[in-house]
Image (cartoon, rainbow, N blue to C red; front, side, top):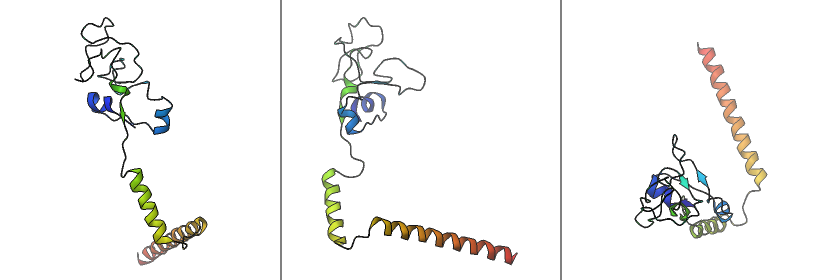
Length: 144
């Protein structure tokens, strides 16, 4: 899950997994600015604001009205921008991943190698590479 407030207001990424989001772990204060630790949505990720004060008339002293045109709440105590998250996929959607898995299963069929066979092949390839490198070193020292 990707924080829309951090994207829009801070031009930064604040990402959290779906499980953590469902547990409410995004409703927190997180430093996004290296030197400024103020609770202000224009500076840091502040996903735990509970007040309902409009920006222009707020008495908290922590900030003006939020920069977002859609918000209008005080950036220091009431902004809701850091509670809006969007699901982002790195490479493909879940449906595309399932389709890829099905096509691989169809291509491999019942000929899949057991996990230990694959590991054994990888380990033997690594040993072979080490032997070749050792032989090259010996040959290089014999030439000089």
